[in-house]
Length: 121
Image (cartoon, rainbow, N blue to C red; front, side, top):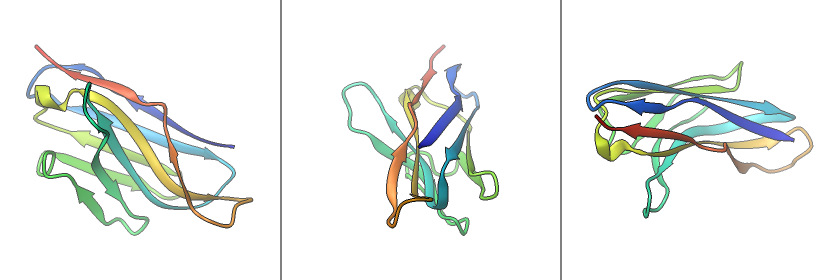
């Protein structure tokens, strides 16, 4: 069994900052990509940023320059720091991981339960 557990999120004023953290646990053999997606009401889920095991990050244009992702491969954790938050950043944020379990032979995608981020004054 694999779990991705997110923490952080909440209500933030426009221009504020927020940190989201995610920890993957369970019978994990290897993790390829970890990242964050978000889904606003009435919209499709979209990539915010992901990061490879080697540390290469891929940011969505909408958050580039005001977000930073980091990863601890030893702890299977990923952290997203978001600055200069805007109302349009309001969404449910999901942690994701492309990983192989200790009993699996191929990689698959796993998701956290999501955490609400609301940017409002």
